[in-house]
Image (cartoon, rainbow, N blue to C red):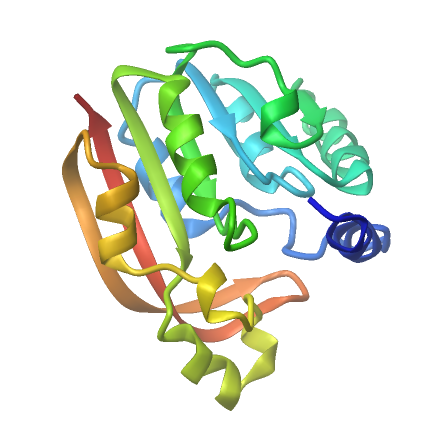
Length: 207
């Protein structure tokens, strides 16, 4: 990923306030409560709100991001909540996760650059054991219409970084689909996710 991309996220996460708040994403919270804790991976985890929630529920949490500032705030949040995270900084291909290492992978607003997003999905899928679960929520391609009405809802403005149901089906082809929908949500997450948005939600079990 380019230095511009890394600098952008370091700048966003360098402020005192948590960019997307300190509370977990609602969909992640709902879905994790249905599962027995095990080992879970959080790609593009930013400031750690979701990872910390999982750790508090007894999960063995691994996370990564390209932002050192994000990691610093995630570790601080973990310390406040008296939990630990294995949080690495770097691009996915430089990290040393193992095939079948995780019981769950949580992709929560993990909007990677368009040229690598499908590759990242397929790569993290290899780290999930058979029978393991993907939990996914991110902005859909229709979300651009919502940004046009209210920029405070946040999200990428490049349509190629947004998702469709067809893309998720293609990226996670060897999964039993528990849920796969495009829906409107009301977001109230920190400074940068506020208002109505259009998202893809996906829960799948790896075959």
